[in-house]
Each structure stands twice: as structure tokens, then as C-alpha cells.
Image (cartoon, rainbow, N blue to C red; front, side):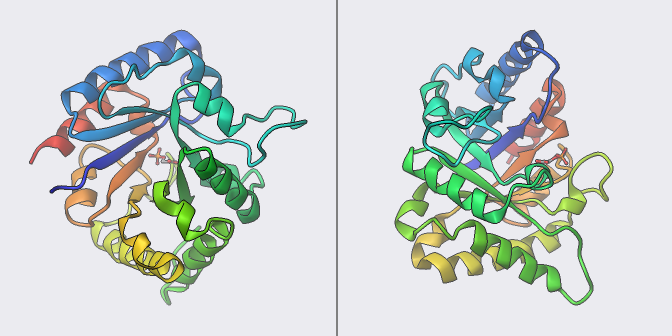
Length: 253
Ligand code: PGA
């Protein structure tokens, strides 16, 4: 049986207001319905989550971009895992590089992953090197990030975990652009090996996604040639038409 492919739309701090968010969400939902062989996870800003409903549509899910590692209490401005659950959220991005750049540590990320898994949410752990060197030291950097981020996550909790490999140099409008499918394939094998060392056979089923300058043209290559289990999409998901194109290209055999 063909494994299902997960496409995560990371809206970041977009769009500007709730009415635009509703429009984008409904258009994206309609597009996802046409290509229901794909799992589509939409991650809007937290303030919009309560107003957007996936309505139980097959293969269409709501995700958050971040959450607190604490269960409850005096944490001004934070959002807990149970609050997300109560709004129908089933996925949460954890440790995105834009949050790490604001000071999020591996230890905090590990605590968040644990909390999400205990709450039965599927956390999408983001990892990736800042830059690449000729000697391949970046592999070690990715390994360390992975091991540290998963320090609080024992194998028995890892069932709903997803990994998103997002090299920093490939993310956003000022980046060098996406990775090549060949380099991605190599990194996916490396991440899988690291996970197997941590979790044994259980790690074989952990989906490894790719993110960084994904568009409709390169998306199918990452799935077919690099064997990514899915994609984490920033800019291309902010426009309903571009995102629909991406889904269509992916759904094509
Ligand atoms: P991008 O962002 O697709 O706009 O490069 C990806 C991400 O940061 O998740």
C-alpha cells in the first residue's frame, strides 16, 4: 500500500486578519477535498484557530505553529496543548527555526514534544543546519539537534511524532532556494539512521518531511526522488491558487 503524503501549510504570521484567514482556509479546504489522497494540515496563527473548522473533512486537519511545554498555570501569553486540543487541533509544529531564532532551546523543544504527545497531538519537530560545509560537519549538527530535541521523548511516546527537515539556508524569500532531491535523499537516510539508533525499529515508521522553498515544481521531486514522506510549505501556502497547484502536481501519478 502506498504511504499517505502529509502536506503542512505553515501560514506563519499571515494573513493580516480573521476574514482573510477564513477565505484562505475555505479555499484551501476545497482544494484539499479534490486531492483527498493527500493529508493536508493547515497551521494558521493561534488566534485564528478557534474560528476555523476542518469539519471532519477526510484528509484535512488543523495544526498549530507552537505551544507551551507546560500543562497549565501562570504563563502569560502562552497557549497549552489541551487548549489546542479543545479547538480541534491535531498537529503542532515544534521548534521551527524562526522560533529557535527567538531563543527557543532544544530543552524547551523537548519539553513541548513530550507534552504534545501526552496530549495525543502529533508534533512536527523541525530540525536543520544553518549552513553546509564541504566536510559534511552539518550532519553532526543535525544529529545533535535531533538527539537533544528528543531527549524527553521515550520510544513508547514516539508513535505520533513527525520530523520536518528544514535547512535554514533554504527557508524564506532571502534564502538560497530549495535543496536538491539528491542531497535531501542523503539527509533523509541520515535522519532515519539517527532515529533508529534512538528508538530501534519503531523509528522506521516516523514520517520525515522536507521544508524550505517548496513550490509546485519541486514538490513532486522531493516525494518521488528523495522519498520525503511529506512537505512543510511556507510562502506557497499563503496563496490558495499556488497551494492548490502544488496539491494537484503532487496528486498526479
Ligand atoms: P518557505 O518556508 O516555504 O517560505 O521557504 C518554509 C518554512 O519555514 O516552514
